[in-house]
Length: 196
Image 1 (spheres, rainbow, N blue to C red):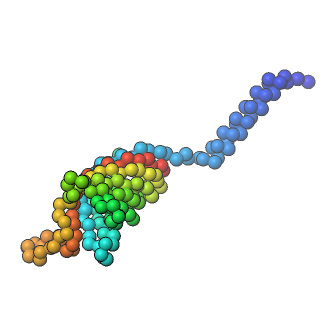
Image 2: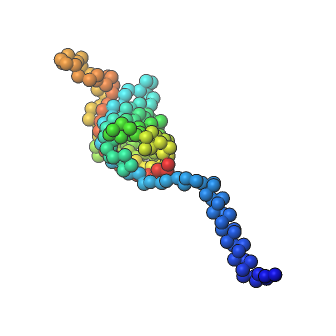
Image 3: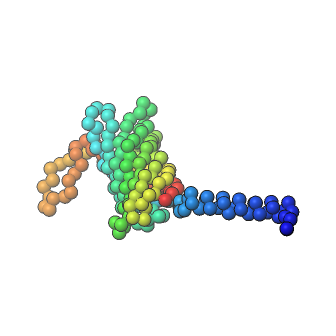
C-alpha cells in the first residue's frame, strides 16, 4: 500500500479544484462579451420646428454625416425635443433618438440621448450642446451592441423663425420647413464604450 504525504494530497486537491472552477467558468460564459471603444465625429444640420403650444417643447430633426470608429463613414438621423428652462439661455434636450447607418446600409446602431443646450453669451446664434448617450442595439455588425457615451459639440443657427415664401421654382425645391421653424448646423464628438 502506497502512502500519500500531505503535500501530494494538497496538490491533488488544488489541481482538481482548479479544473472544476475552470469548467464552471467555461459553461457559465461560453462567449464572453467583447468591448470596444466608440468614437465619432460629425457634421449635422437641424430643423427646429415651432412649438405646438406656447412655451412648449420644440421638436427637431437632425441629419448629417458622421465618421464612426466601429462603422466607418455613416449617415446620421436623429430626433429630439428642445425644452426651455427657467435659466435664460439654457435648454434641456429630451427624448433623443439616434440612428447611425453604415455607408453600405448593412449595419445600423441605435441610441437614446438626453442633454442640454447653453446659448453662447456673446453670440446668441451659437451654443454648446452636451448629451448623455445610451446605445440600445443595432443590426448587422452592431447587432446586440449596447453601452454609453458622452457627446459634446456646438451649434449655430442659420435662420431663426422662418417664414417660408411660396415655392415657384421649376423643378420645385425640397419642401421648406414650416413657418416658425429655425434651422442650423452642428459639429460634435461622441466618445464612449460599446459591448456586444
